Image: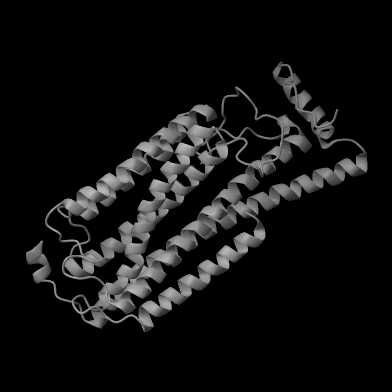
Amino acid sequence: MSGTRLRALSLATFAALTTAFALVFFYAPNDADQGFIQKIFYVHVPVAIVTLVAYVAAAVLAAIHLRTRDRAWDLRSYVVIHIALIFNIMGLLTGAIWAKASWGHWWVWDEPTLVSFLIVFLLFATYQPLRFSIEDPERQARYASVFAIMAGAFVPLNFMAVRLAQPFVHPRVFATSSGGLPGSMAFVFVLSLIAIALLFATLVAYEIGAKRARWQLRTLQRRLLGADAVAPAGRSAAPSGAVGPDALDGPPAVPSRRPQGATS
Amino acid sequence: MSALLAAAPALPLHEAGKYVAGAYVVLVAIVLVYVAIMATRLRRMQRQLGELNAALELREKAGRSPADHARPEVESRHQDTGQDAPRRYSPGP
């Protein structure tokens, strides 16, 4: 993504988040049952939705990687899962805060939605160690893509299983048999969802840009200073090597050298 | 759970306010931590770019590649350990 588009995306994210948060507190009415505490839903639910959609999107990106063998798709899948994990933590924390205020407990183990969200988090938390455990970049990318597809397929199955489970203790934001959100609250909710999705997209764009810039810098170092002057990258969970059309055509990475240290 | 909900009515504003503030602060704090990590990475890359710039200036002044500057040090290091110096990548023909 070019600098101009990234700047535009960042500004759109800032404007959307500011507007959404202002409307949450100054426009959306208080919930009749939950009162002021329901304001947490405008951040908690969009974060959870974006997280789950991102996991599925990462599976699609991984499938494209396996189909095309283009490492740029592996990078995209990796970064989407990386940011989705951060959003997953946000969802767990904001949910725990709401649970404490509403139920009096930070965590309730017999609530299917909470536990299933934690299981999804733990499942994807193994993605990084899996990548780190494989030294060969080609195999690392291939195995990680297979994992991302399998775990991504688990997400909608898990979601449906929880929706079908009884009892429905966890509040449902969208329409249920007993009715959904009124118009003003639904409008603010959709705007919050868009703002959080934009935040996710912005962070993904920055992360991909940073990874490519780092690799280009290493390529330049090898070109200008010689391969010996540049320390080996070491084992890493992050994709390495040619990661997209923006990457420079540089010399091959230092082969078959035992990594001296580990980087994230 | 339904008994738990029945026993937990809506909190008054002065009680609920701290929880709502906490949830939004968590969101902003995590994003800020991420931005801080990105800023640290950016600073490191800027420093490395500065080093590359300095190497280029040295190359222009001396009229030879910075890799040539690095060669004596690398070769002497391998001579000290009794190993052959590895083949280096050369950008030029």
